[in-house]
Amino acid sequence: MSSFGKKLRECREAKDLSHSELAKLLNTNHSIIGKYERDEVKPTIDVVKRLADELDTIILPKNRTVSLSGKTS
Image 1 (cartoon, helix red, strand yellow):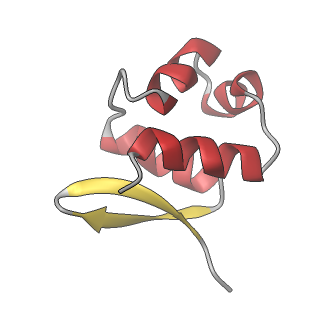
Image 2 (cartoon, rainbow, N blue to C red; image 1 turned 90 degrees about the horizontal axis):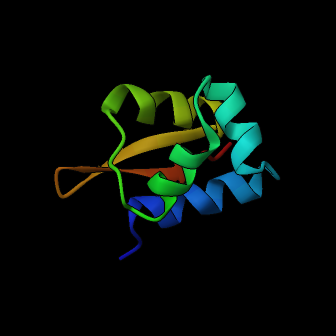
């Protein structure tokens, strides 16, 4: 099973964004993006929603946790 952080990294890289670029879109520091991707820090649900919006993904519940999944047309 993929962790939230691994999925976040996959989505960020699919959009060809650096940590700094994604952080700027979220008005936060680039180091927190790395911490999310390494599963060192869990984002709040509000941050997850913002990540999903910026990365053009949807949020899917999985075992009472939140994961990111690519949107389909």
